[in-house]
View 1: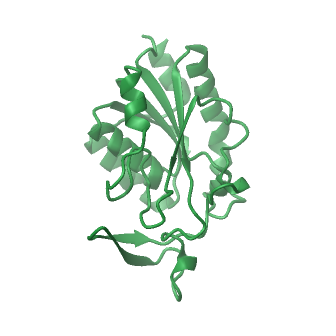
View 2: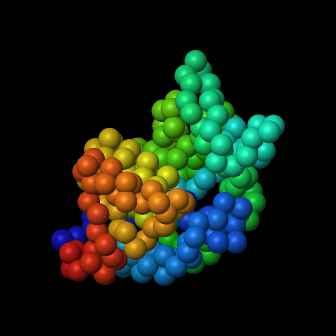
Length: 218
């Protein structure tokens, strides 16, 4: 096999999601060497590497600080263009131009394309392909289509949120989608089993390790 029609998507590998960040994911740094190994493999095969980047304005409506009396993990209803959705509130994170929004140094040089998301103050954006209400579609799918990509391999943060919705949208946009389990960590560990079940039910291929994936390709 070759990786000519395969792209690697690095989802939100940013400082604010590390253990010392403002929205920390437990053991987040533990997967960085695995992602680095996977990205190196793609690079050696001259394959496309794309990164998504949470890129919020400081007053983003998903921040608990924008809702007096509310706290992170509370649920509120947000309405935008006559469409209402439930929104989990988060600590301020990945604010545009801050160190916390930067892609981690170990992976920064790999992607040739960076797709920023979450810039609309009124709508959150978990998926790398579109915002949560599908008002706006990011350039990700177009970039993949233009390069003849048929398969995507997904990794990053967090398994149960942005990785999950990026995988689900990748399937919706017609890409054969693989998630490598040792390249991702969940925000809420108790949700991991259900997340994997949902992804498998929607046709996402789950591969346990980077080594297992490389063995399939070589």
